Length: 148
Figure 1: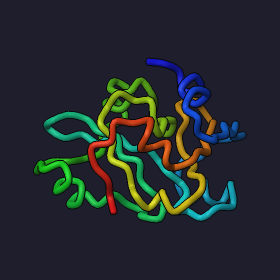
Figure 2 (figure 1 turned 180 degrees about the vertical axis):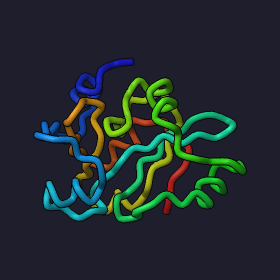
Figure 3 (figure 1 turned 180 degrees about the horizontal axis):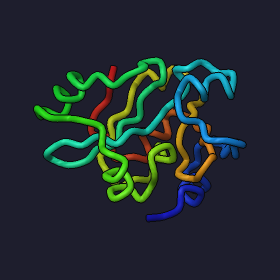
Figure 4 (figure 1 turned 90 degrees about the vertical axis):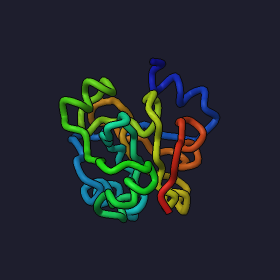
């Protein structure tokens, strides 16, 4: 897998890697830290289904994952968040550092992120947040579905 910074430099999208002094664990914490709308926070979550793993990049304004909506979108009966061990084994990243792109898994992207000029989320680098144009999420990932 190519490094996140290499992908960013060659993407053509405006971005910033922000080195935080401490871990940012929740969308609420991130919104407060950066003094932005909570909807701009874009955590990347790993979902498990019997058919495989998926990356969900969701707007912080949702507050929770609507598993019924995900089940309909993926046309499967069982969907859950991957365990910490599954996340690490599947992505190579730990929970809290999952990048918004660069993972070779199918992605589901929250369309609510498109109403902002920039979104903030995981970079794959410990204690570092990525600020990026949300359109990059659609261009740099294999998107198989969206949330409205």
